[in-house]
Length: 424
Ligand code: AMP
Ligand code: GLY
Image (cartoon, rainbow, N blue to C red):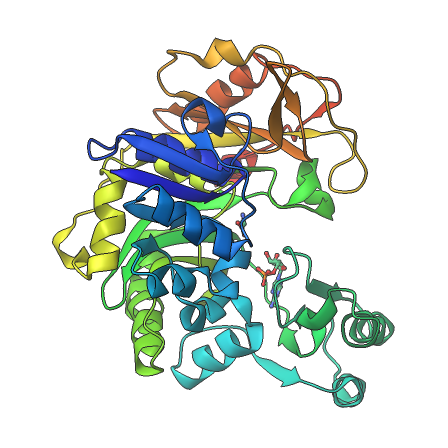
Protein backbone atom coordinates (compact mmCIF):
# COMPACT_ATOMS: atom_id res chain seq x y z
CA UNK A 1 0.00 0.00 0.00
CA UNK A 2 0.91 3.61 -0.49
CA UNK A 3 -0.08 5.79 2.46
CA UNK A 4 -0.29 9.59 2.71
CA UNK A 5 -0.25 11.29 6.13
CA UNK A 6 -1.41 14.90 6.43
CA UNK A 7 0.27 17.06 9.09
CA UNK A 8 3.68 18.15 10.29
CA UNK A 9 3.97 17.68 14.05
CA UNK A 10 5.30 15.15 16.56
CA UNK A 11 1.92 13.42 16.41
CA UNK A 12 2.28 12.85 12.66
CA UNK A 13 5.86 11.61 13.13
CA UNK A 14 4.59 9.04 15.65
CA UNK A 15 1.77 8.02 13.28
CA UNK A 16 4.25 7.71 10.38
CA UNK A 17 6.61 5.65 12.55
CA UNK A 18 3.78 3.29 13.49
CA UNK A 19 2.49 3.06 9.90
CA UNK A 20 6.04 2.23 8.76
CA UNK A 21 5.91 -0.97 10.86
CA UNK A 22 2.80 -2.22 9.08
CA UNK A 23 3.43 -5.24 6.91
CA UNK A 24 0.86 -3.86 4.47
CA UNK A 25 2.75 -0.66 3.68
CA UNK A 26 5.42 -0.16 0.99
CA UNK A 27 5.64 3.60 0.75
CA UNK A 28 4.69 6.57 2.96
CA UNK A 29 4.23 10.18 1.92
CA UNK A 30 3.65 13.05 4.31
CA UNK A 31 2.25 16.51 3.50
CA UNK A 32 3.94 18.72 4.51
CA UNK A 33 5.91 16.65 7.08
CA UNK A 34 9.08 17.75 8.87
CA UNK A 35 12.79 16.96 9.20
CA UNK A 36 12.31 13.74 11.17
CA UNK A 37 9.38 12.47 9.13
CA UNK A 38 11.52 12.86 5.99
CA UNK A 39 13.68 9.97 7.21
CA UNK A 40 10.81 7.49 6.95
CA UNK A 41 8.45 9.14 4.47
CA UNK A 42 8.71 11.23 1.34
CA UNK A 43 7.66 14.74 2.36
CA UNK A 44 5.51 16.61 -0.14
CA UNK A 45 5.34 20.38 -0.10
CA UNK A 46 1.55 20.73 0.20
CA UNK A 47 -0.11 22.44 3.16
CA UNK A 48 -2.73 20.63 5.23
CA UNK A 49 -5.43 23.11 4.16
CA UNK A 50 -4.72 22.82 0.41
CA UNK A 51 -7.44 20.25 -0.19
CA UNK A 52 -7.42 20.43 -4.01
CA UNK A 53 -3.69 19.84 -4.14
CA UNK A 54 -3.84 17.01 -1.61
CA UNK A 55 -6.62 15.27 -3.55
CA UNK A 56 -4.78 15.76 -6.87
CA UNK A 57 -1.59 14.32 -5.34
CA UNK A 58 -3.42 11.29 -3.93
CA UNK A 59 -4.98 10.60 -7.33
CA UNK A 60 -1.75 11.08 -9.25
CA UNK A 61 0.24 8.79 -6.93
CA UNK A 62 -2.62 6.27 -6.57
CA UNK A 63 -2.52 6.56 -2.77
CA UNK A 64 -4.38 3.67 -1.14
CA UNK A 65 -5.01 5.32 2.23
CA UNK A 66 -4.76 8.90 3.51
CA UNK A 67 -4.61 9.60 7.24
CA UNK A 68 -5.46 13.08 8.51
CA UNK A 69 -3.58 14.01 11.67
CA UNK A 70 -4.69 17.59 12.30
CA UNK A 71 -7.92 19.22 13.45
CA UNK A 72 -8.14 22.18 11.06
CA UNK A 73 -8.40 20.19 7.81
CA UNK A 74 -10.86 17.74 9.42
CA UNK A 75 -13.13 20.53 10.62
CA UNK A 76 -12.76 22.18 7.20
CA UNK A 77 -14.00 19.07 5.37
CA UNK A 78 -10.86 17.45 3.93
CA UNK A 79 -12.36 13.96 4.33
CA UNK A 80 -15.40 14.95 2.26
CA UNK A 81 -13.06 16.29 -0.45
CA UNK A 82 -11.20 12.95 -0.63
CA UNK A 83 -14.36 10.83 -0.53
CA UNK A 84 -15.93 12.85 -3.34
CA UNK A 85 -13.14 11.60 -5.57
CA UNK A 86 -13.54 8.01 -4.38
CA UNK A 87 -10.32 8.08 -2.35
CA UNK A 88 -9.91 6.09 0.89
CA UNK A 89 -9.31 8.38 3.83
CA UNK A 90 -9.21 7.99 7.61
CA UNK A 91 -10.92 10.66 9.70
CA UNK A 92 -14.38 12.10 10.40
CA UNK A 93 -16.35 13.95 7.74
CA UNK A 94 -17.05 17.63 8.25
CA UNK A 95 -20.47 16.99 9.75
CA UNK A 96 -18.86 14.76 12.42
CA UNK A 97 -15.63 16.71 13.00
CA UNK A 98 -17.91 19.42 14.39
CA UNK A 99 -17.64 17.41 17.61
CA UNK A 100 -14.30 19.21 18.02
CA UNK A 101 -14.97 22.19 15.76
CA UNK A 102 -17.84 23.64 17.80
CA UNK A 103 -17.98 23.70 21.59
CA UNK A 104 -21.62 24.80 21.40
CA UNK A 105 -22.40 21.71 19.32
CA UNK A 106 -20.54 19.34 21.63
CA UNK A 107 -22.04 20.78 24.82
CA UNK A 108 -25.57 20.66 23.38
CA UNK A 109 -24.96 17.07 22.25
CA UNK A 110 -23.85 16.05 25.74
CA UNK A 111 -26.84 17.75 27.32
CA UNK A 112 -29.32 16.16 24.90
CA UNK A 113 -27.89 12.65 25.40
CA UNK A 114 -27.12 12.90 29.14
CA UNK A 115 -23.36 12.57 28.75
CA UNK A 116 -21.75 13.94 31.93
CA UNK A 117 -20.12 17.34 31.47
CA UNK A 118 -19.84 20.65 33.33
CA UNK A 119 -23.01 22.80 33.48
CA UNK A 120 -23.09 25.59 30.89
CA UNK A 121 -24.98 28.20 28.86
CA UNK A 122 -24.29 29.37 25.32
CA UNK A 123 -24.33 32.93 23.99
CA UNK A 124 -24.31 34.55 20.58
CA UNK A 125 -24.50 38.12 21.86
CA UNK A 126 -21.99 39.80 24.19
CA UNK A 127 -24.80 41.74 25.92
CA UNK A 128 -26.57 38.51 26.89
CA UNK A 129 -23.30 36.99 28.08
CA UNK A 130 -22.57 40.01 30.28
CA UNK A 131 -26.13 40.13 31.63
CA UNK A 132 -25.72 36.46 32.59
CA UNK A 133 -22.37 37.13 34.29
CA UNK A 134 -23.78 40.03 36.27
CA UNK A 135 -26.19 37.61 37.93
CA UNK A 136 -23.54 34.95 38.46
CA UNK A 137 -22.07 34.62 41.94
CA UNK A 138 -19.74 31.65 41.59
CA UNK A 139 -16.13 32.22 40.56
CA UNK A 140 -13.94 31.05 38.91
CA UNK A 141 -16.06 30.63 35.80
CA UNK A 142 -14.95 29.34 32.41
CA UNK A 143 -15.39 31.08 29.04
CA UNK A 144 -14.86 29.11 25.83
CA UNK A 145 -14.76 30.30 22.25
CA UNK A 146 -17.04 28.08 20.15
CA UNK A 147 -14.57 27.38 17.36
CA UNK A 148 -10.98 26.20 16.98
CA UNK A 149 -8.49 28.56 18.63
CA UNK A 150 -5.23 26.58 18.75
CA UNK A 151 -6.14 25.34 22.23
CA UNK A 152 -6.13 28.92 23.54
CA UNK A 153 -9.83 29.73 23.40
CA UNK A 154 -10.53 28.79 27.02
CA UNK A 155 -10.41 31.51 29.69
CA UNK A 156 -10.64 30.77 33.39
CA UNK A 157 -11.94 33.96 35.01
CA UNK A 158 -11.64 34.67 38.74
CA UNK A 159 -13.94 37.68 38.96
CA UNK A 160 -16.78 39.47 37.20
CA UNK A 161 -14.28 42.02 35.84
CA UNK A 162 -12.08 39.32 34.34
CA UNK A 163 -15.07 37.55 32.87
CA UNK A 164 -16.38 40.77 31.27
CA UNK A 165 -12.93 41.38 29.79
CA UNK A 166 -12.98 37.82 28.50
CA UNK A 167 -16.32 38.29 26.77
CA UNK A 168 -14.97 41.48 25.22
CA UNK A 169 -11.81 39.86 23.89
CA UNK A 170 -13.60 36.78 22.52
CA UNK A 171 -16.80 38.32 21.14
CA UNK A 172 -16.02 41.97 20.40
CA UNK A 173 -12.27 42.20 19.78
CA UNK A 174 -12.46 38.78 18.08
CA UNK A 175 -9.17 37.61 19.52
CA UNK A 176 -9.75 34.27 17.78
CA UNK A 177 -11.70 35.60 14.82
CA UNK A 178 -15.02 33.95 14.05
CA UNK A 179 -14.27 31.22 16.63
CA UNK A 180 -15.66 33.73 19.14
CA UNK A 181 -18.96 34.46 17.34
CA UNK A 182 -20.56 32.18 19.91
CA UNK A 183 -19.24 31.30 23.35
CA UNK A 184 -19.92 28.78 26.06
CA UNK A 185 -19.91 29.92 29.69
CA UNK A 186 -19.23 26.93 31.86
CA UNK A 187 -19.15 25.90 35.50
CA UNK A 188 -15.58 25.55 36.86
CA UNK A 189 -14.85 21.97 37.88
CA UNK A 190 -11.75 20.39 39.42
CA UNK A 191 -9.79 17.17 39.39
CA UNK A 192 -7.01 15.43 37.47
CA UNK A 193 -7.30 15.68 33.69
CA UNK A 194 -6.77 12.61 31.58
CA UNK A 195 -6.80 11.94 27.85
CA UNK A 196 -8.42 8.82 26.46
CA UNK A 197 -8.03 8.10 22.75
CA UNK A 198 -10.31 5.76 20.83
CA UNK A 199 -10.88 4.34 17.35
CA UNK A 200 -14.43 4.62 16.04
CA UNK A 201 -16.02 3.08 12.91
CA UNK A 202 -19.37 4.84 13.06
CA UNK A 203 -20.98 2.28 15.41
CA UNK A 204 -18.24 0.52 17.38
CA UNK A 205 -15.74 2.26 19.63
CA UNK A 206 -12.48 0.73 20.85
CA UNK A 207 -10.62 2.52 23.60
CA UNK A 208 -6.85 2.69 23.35
CA UNK A 209 -5.10 3.35 26.66
CA UNK A 210 -5.12 6.36 28.96
CA UNK A 211 -2.58 9.18 28.93
CA UNK A 212 -1.97 12.47 30.69
CA UNK A 213 -0.67 15.72 29.23
CA UNK A 214 1.15 18.67 30.85
CA UNK A 215 -0.18 21.78 29.17
CA UNK A 216 1.59 24.56 31.07
CA UNK A 217 5.03 25.76 29.99
CA UNK A 218 6.77 25.60 33.37
CA UNK A 219 7.40 23.13 36.17
CA UNK A 220 4.64 22.75 38.75
CA UNK A 221 2.00 23.61 36.10
CA UNK A 222 3.03 27.25 36.09
CA UNK A 223 3.35 29.55 33.09
CA UNK A 224 1.33 29.83 29.91
CA UNK A 225 -0.73 27.15 28.25
CA UNK A 226 1.09 25.35 25.44
CA UNK A 227 0.25 22.63 22.95
CA UNK A 228 1.62 20.16 25.54
CA UNK A 229 5.05 19.87 27.19
CA UNK A 230 5.03 16.15 27.87
CA UNK A 231 2.86 13.11 28.47
CA UNK A 232 2.76 9.76 30.17
CA UNK A 233 0.77 6.58 29.58
CA UNK A 234 -1.00 4.85 31.18
CA UNK A 235 -2.13 7.26 33.88
CA UNK A 236 -2.88 5.74 37.29
CA UNK A 237 -5.38 8.58 37.87
CA UNK A 238 -7.61 6.84 35.35
CA UNK A 239 -8.81 4.10 37.70
CA UNK A 240 -10.82 1.00 36.91
CA UNK A 241 -13.79 2.79 38.44
CA UNK A 242 -13.37 5.78 36.13
CA UNK A 243 -13.03 3.43 33.17
CA UNK A 244 -16.22 1.59 34.06
CA UNK A 245 -18.09 4.86 34.52
CA UNK A 246 -16.98 6.16 31.12
CA UNK A 247 -17.78 2.88 29.39
CA UNK A 248 -21.28 3.12 30.81
CA UNK A 249 -22.02 6.83 30.32
CA UNK A 250 -19.51 8.42 27.94
CA UNK A 251 -17.81 6.42 25.18
CA UNK A 252 -20.50 4.40 23.43
CA UNK A 253 -23.03 7.09 24.37
CA UNK A 254 -21.07 9.65 22.34
CA UNK A 255 -20.82 7.41 19.28
CA UNK A 256 -24.53 6.56 19.47
CA UNK A 257 -25.45 10.22 19.91
CA UNK A 258 -23.51 11.18 16.77
CA UNK A 259 -25.24 8.44 14.79
CA UNK A 260 -28.64 9.48 16.10
CA UNK A 261 -27.90 13.01 14.89
CA UNK A 262 -27.09 11.73 11.39
CA UNK A 263 -23.42 12.54 11.92
CA UNK A 264 -21.83 9.10 11.94
CA UNK A 265 -18.31 9.48 13.35
CA UNK A 266 -15.43 7.49 11.84
CA UNK A 267 -11.94 8.22 13.03
CA UNK A 268 -10.37 9.04 16.36
CA UNK A 269 -12.34 10.46 19.27
CA UNK A 270 -10.06 11.91 21.93
CA UNK A 271 -11.95 12.32 25.21
CA UNK A 272 -10.56 15.08 27.41
CA UNK A 273 -11.86 14.02 30.82
CA UNK A 274 -11.75 15.66 34.21
CA UNK A 275 -11.96 13.20 37.11
CA UNK A 276 -13.99 15.30 39.55
CA UNK A 277 -14.97 14.25 43.07
CA UNK A 278 -18.44 13.56 41.60
CA UNK A 279 -17.06 11.29 38.88
CA UNK A 280 -15.61 11.79 35.38
CA UNK A 281 -16.87 14.69 33.26
CA UNK A 282 -16.14 15.35 29.59
CA UNK A 283 -14.18 18.61 29.31
CA UNK A 284 -13.81 18.44 25.57
CA UNK A 285 -13.81 16.19 22.54
CA UNK A 286 -11.15 16.19 19.87
CA UNK A 287 -11.67 14.53 16.52
CA UNK A 288 -8.04 13.40 16.09
CA UNK A 289 -5.06 11.95 17.91
CA UNK A 290 -3.59 14.09 20.71
CA UNK A 291 -0.21 15.75 20.47
CA UNK A 292 1.90 14.71 22.45
CA UNK A 293 -0.39 11.88 23.69
CA UNK A 294 0.20 9.94 20.46
CA UNK A 295 3.93 9.89 21.20
CA UNK A 296 3.30 7.74 24.32
CA UNK A 297 0.25 5.78 23.20
CA UNK A 298 1.43 4.41 19.84
CA UNK A 299 4.79 3.07 21.06
CA UNK A 300 2.77 0.87 23.47
CA UNK A 301 0.30 -0.35 20.85
CA UNK A 302 0.81 -3.89 19.56
CA UNK A 303 -1.64 -3.91 16.63
CA UNK A 304 -0.84 -3.20 13.00
CA UNK A 305 -2.29 0.31 12.93
CA UNK A 306 -3.12 0.21 9.23
CA UNK A 307 -5.44 -2.74 9.84
CA UNK A 308 -7.20 -0.70 12.53
CA UNK A 309 -7.52 2.36 10.27
CA UNK A 310 -9.01 0.18 7.54
CA UNK A 311 -11.45 -1.47 9.96
CA UNK A 312 -12.69 2.00 10.97
CA UNK A 313 -13.27 2.96 7.35
CA UNK A 314 -14.97 -0.37 6.53
CA UNK A 315 -17.13 -0.50 9.66
CA UNK A 316 -15.51 -3.73 10.92
CA UNK A 317 -13.87 -2.47 14.08
CA UNK A 318 -15.88 -5.00 16.12
CA UNK A 319 -13.56 -7.68 14.69
CA UNK A 320 -10.40 -6.00 16.03
CA UNK A 321 -8.99 -6.50 19.51
CA UNK A 322 -6.74 -3.60 20.45
CA UNK A 323 -3.67 -4.65 22.40
CA UNK A 324 -1.30 -2.53 24.45
CA UNK A 325 1.92 -3.47 26.18
CA UNK A 326 1.90 -3.66 29.97
CA UNK A 327 4.83 -1.27 30.25
CA UNK A 328 4.66 2.53 30.52
CA UNK A 329 5.89 5.38 28.33
CA UNK A 330 6.88 8.98 29.07
CA UNK A 331 7.42 11.74 26.50
CA UNK A 332 9.37 14.89 27.36
CA UNK A 333 9.03 17.73 24.88
CA UNK A 334 12.21 19.62 24.05
CA UNK A 335 11.14 23.13 23.15
CA UNK A 336 12.79 26.37 22.08
CA UNK A 337 13.33 28.62 25.10
CA UNK A 338 10.61 31.30 25.11
CA UNK A 339 7.87 29.03 23.72
CA UNK A 340 4.87 29.58 23.58
CA UNK A 341 5.66 33.28 23.17
CA UNK A 342 8.82 34.43 21.37
CA UNK A 343 11.63 32.08 20.44
CA UNK A 344 14.39 31.74 17.87
CA UNK A 345 14.72 28.98 15.28
CA UNK A 346 17.30 27.62 12.86
CA UNK A 347 19.73 26.02 15.35
CA UNK A 348 21.40 22.76 14.42
CA UNK A 349 20.19 19.73 16.42
CA UNK A 350 23.02 17.42 17.44
CA UNK A 351 22.95 13.86 18.75
CA UNK A 352 19.88 12.53 16.94
CA UNK A 353 21.88 9.46 15.88
CA UNK A 354 22.07 8.39 19.53
CA UNK A 355 18.50 7.10 19.18
CA UNK A 356 19.34 4.75 16.31
CA UNK A 357 18.82 1.07 17.21
CA UNK A 358 17.94 1.87 20.84
CA UNK A 359 15.01 -0.29 21.74
CA UNK A 360 12.30 1.51 23.69
CA UNK A 361 13.65 5.02 22.98
CA UNK A 362 12.21 7.34 20.34
CA UNK A 363 12.76 10.87 19.17
CA UNK A 364 9.70 12.28 17.43
CA UNK A 365 10.24 15.52 15.53
CA UNK A 366 7.76 18.39 15.82
CA UNK A 367 9.36 21.72 14.81
CA UNK A 368 12.37 20.64 12.77
CA UNK A 369 13.45 20.91 9.17
CA UNK A 370 16.26 19.76 6.95
CA UNK A 371 18.56 22.62 5.85
CA UNK A 372 21.84 22.03 3.96
CA UNK A 373 21.87 18.40 5.00
CA UNK A 374 21.44 19.22 8.69
CA UNK A 375 18.38 19.00 10.92
CA UNK A 376 17.65 22.41 12.48
CA UNK A 377 15.05 23.75 14.92
CA UNK A 378 11.99 25.16 13.18
CA UNK A 379 9.31 25.70 15.82
CA UNK A 380 8.38 26.13 19.47
CA UNK A 381 8.03 22.47 20.26
CA UNK A 382 11.07 20.91 18.60
CA UNK A 383 11.29 17.24 19.61
CA UNK A 384 9.40 14.74 21.73
CA UNK A 385 11.72 12.31 23.48
CA UNK A 386 9.82 9.16 24.44
CA UNK A 387 11.09 6.21 26.46
CA UNK A 388 9.43 3.11 27.74
CA UNK A 389 10.04 1.40 31.08
CA UNK A 390 8.60 -1.39 33.19
CA UNK A 391 6.58 1.21 35.09
CA UNK A 392 6.08 4.97 34.97
CA UNK A 393 9.00 5.71 37.26
CA UNK A 394 11.39 3.70 35.12
CA UNK A 395 9.99 5.20 31.92
CA UNK A 396 10.43 8.69 33.32
CA UNK A 397 14.03 8.04 34.34
CA UNK A 398 14.75 6.63 30.88
CA UNK A 399 13.08 9.54 29.09
CA UNK A 400 15.02 12.16 31.08
CA UNK A 401 18.26 10.25 30.48
CA UNK A 402 17.54 10.30 26.74
CA UNK A 403 16.86 14.06 26.75
CA UNK A 404 20.63 14.40 27.37
CA UNK A 405 21.47 12.63 24.12
CA UNK A 406 20.34 15.56 21.95
CA UNK A 407 21.31 19.17 22.08
CA UNK A 408 20.55 22.47 20.38
CA UNK A 409 20.86 26.12 21.31
CA UNK A 410 18.03 27.39 23.56
CA UNK A 411 16.87 23.85 24.41
CA UNK A 412 14.13 24.04 27.07
CA UNK A 413 12.09 21.35 28.83
CA UNK A 414 10.00 20.78 31.92
CA UNK A 415 11.70 18.67 34.57
CA UNK A 416 8.57 17.25 36.19
CA UNK A 417 6.78 15.32 33.46
CA UNK A 418 4.96 12.44 35.11
CA UNK A 419 5.99 13.51 38.58
CA UNK A 420 2.42 13.83 39.84
CA UNK A 421 2.25 10.05 39.94
CA UNK A 422 4.60 10.07 42.94
CA UNK A 423 1.75 11.51 44.97
CA UNK A 424 -0.59 8.56 44.46
P1 AMP B 1 -10.48 22.56 26.71
O1 AMP B 1 -9.85 23.11 25.46
O2 AMP B 1 -11.96 22.63 26.73
O3 AMP B 1 -9.92 21.19 27.08
O4 AMP B 1 -9.93 23.50 27.89
C1 AMP B 1 -8.57 23.76 28.06
C2 AMP B 1 -8.21 23.62 29.50
O5 AMP B 1 -8.98 24.52 30.31
C3 AMP B 1 -8.52 22.24 30.06
O6 AMP B 1 -7.47 21.34 29.81
C4 AMP B 1 -8.72 22.54 31.53
O7 AMP B 1 -7.49 22.60 32.20
C5 AMP B 1 -9.33 23.90 31.53
N1 AMP B 1 -10.80 23.80 31.61
C6 AMP B 1 -11.67 23.69 30.59
N2 AMP B 1 -12.93 23.62 31.03
C7 AMP B 1 -12.89 23.69 32.37
C8 AMP B 1 -13.87 23.68 33.41
N3 AMP B 1 -15.19 23.60 33.14
N4 AMP B 1 -13.45 23.76 34.68
C9 AMP B 1 -12.12 23.87 34.97
N5 AMP B 1 -11.16 23.90 34.04
C10 AMP B 1 -11.52 23.81 32.75
N1 GLY C 1 -2.48 17.36 23.93
C1 GLY C 1 -3.74 17.96 23.76
C2 GLY C 1 -4.23 17.97 22.38
O1 GLY C 1 -3.69 17.34 21.48
O2 GLY C 1 -5.22 18.65 22.13
